Image (tube, rainbow over all chains, first blue to last red; front, side, top):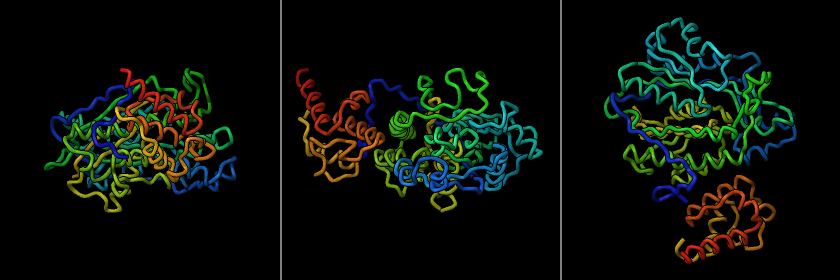
Length: 347
Length: 85
């Protein structure tokens, strides 16, 4: 049931904001990803609380998730993914002008993971900070990188999405709703001035904080820190999020392609945030994209929040599914609520 | 929704979303019990029905609909409302 014209917009829906890329174009020139070795399968979860492989698989498409060992820092995952992206781009950390780390699971309130990376790599100087837009963080980070390059403030930007979400899950009956969904991981991309016709063409970026209760971590509405909640647990209103996600995927994909001046059937590769296979499947069907054009690895990694898009993109690159000139759609959504999508021509 | 809704069309739409045979989609079939639709299936079905018929169907309204017949009545009512306008 693919849409053939502009998607239906509910009367209560926010209009989306889209932006055509301006100034000096930028593109992705290197991607890397990392996930901890330890894997937690649905069968492992069956032993921990009342659930079943069949239930989890049918509802989410997830079979395993990678889980960091106790004590692992988000910084550790970010460093591995970041190093791999730098290697893929053929540059060193000392070449960076800007480091942006998207994470909802920082190791502490501050300093930022971005600054900790400078210390780990002994590469000071770059303008460095973390951002928190939940599962949309990676797309927001790419947008900030593109803006910095467009305006001449940076040449080499490293954007990372890294999460140790398992710290905020409850692997007992109480936490089953989210414990089955989330996993740990990190992914990164180097963004540089684009050559030729490559580069980001358009962006759709937005948020609607009125929906903040749909996905939360810890005390609501005071907030985990203010409430001195020592063990904040991720909570999600599944069907509401599903509804929001299917709608926003379709609308932002359509809008960003319109702004970029291409039709949906010109998309070569769709790399969606890996939240739930059924959301990906529903979005792909409504966009009229065959699954050969859709990257999904949620079966192995679960939902890794800000890391999911670069983890999927990295897998697609390694499988030879992305070539120069391809029109690639990256789209995410997450807690906040937040959303972001971009259409880029692969370098 | 200018044309009168066609039941065969609704059968096909629901069959595709719910992954069942169109013949099994009958007025008295319950979404949950007979068609094994879970909450996510219903969200998708709402989106597809809204797209196809240009209507808005709230979750509260759908909560009150237990079978295909109730959804069909809703579509007929919406159609009638438009005719009046």
